[in-house]
Image (tube, rainbow, N blue to C red; front, side, top):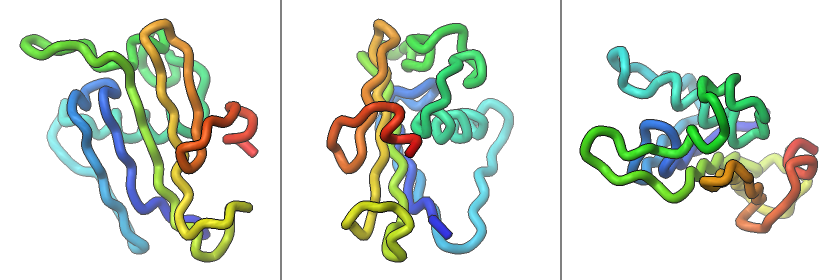
Amino acid sequence: MTVIKKVHVNGFKSFARPLDLEFGNGFSAVIGPNGAGKSNVADSICFVLGKLSAKGLRAEKSANLIFNGGKKGSPAKHAEVSIHFDNKDKEFPIDSREVKITRVVKQNGSSVYKINDETKTREQILE
């Protein structure tokens, strides 16, 4: 079974600064008070795995997934999320012990997808 080792978010929704969420082989849970960003963690995973509908990620349009600056900050130029998967059992057809899948959304709403920092199409990500 594939295991998520880490989720890296930067400029995505409420995550203004880079943040690494480490996961383990056992049970992992995301807990916190209302408004702390738990749903945004789930949205970030759906986002990087290719969910097209911004509304399904609780946003009006893709550009709204980018951190807007809040009350005192400055808006991010783009949103980026990466999921690092353990690939020691070669569940992904990639010759690497870890597979990093990344999605970047720009202000114009366009997305860039990457596998291990190599640009790919959305279809290649889904395969």
